[in-house]
Image (cartoon, rainbow, N blue to C red; front, side, top):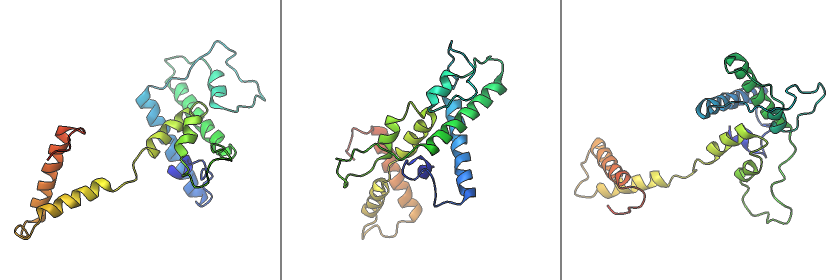
Length: 189
């Protein structure tokens, strides 16, 4: 998902056709999950609900502004529209040109951040931007694990070298749980 959601690698050229299709299907499933959680409903508008036959759709706002007025009782039609809007959003994102989120005068040493692209493009790709925010907000750090190993190393000393792994695990867990109960403001213990 991260490869597809990164504007620089969205074409997924290094993957096989089958892997690309699986990735796209997974993204569509995630989009449907977000719809279910957020109570997705296609916006309606008093404009002409039908798209002209040769009307080019350039953004998701074009799609939504021309969406048919849906009857609340017709769930199948709603699901089909949702699915087609997701497919269209993915297609538009895939066909979009290269990311122009960095100006030419910015330092080349600055680290590229795909979240800046999604922040700018959230109105054009509403569902994909929510998924990207969730995926790219996961910290890529091992600091918490290293803290736990350091704590376990403090428990196992010369005098306590015969502690079983289960006992050490329980001690580390209890310590971490106490820290969790005290909240993020407390650094004591």
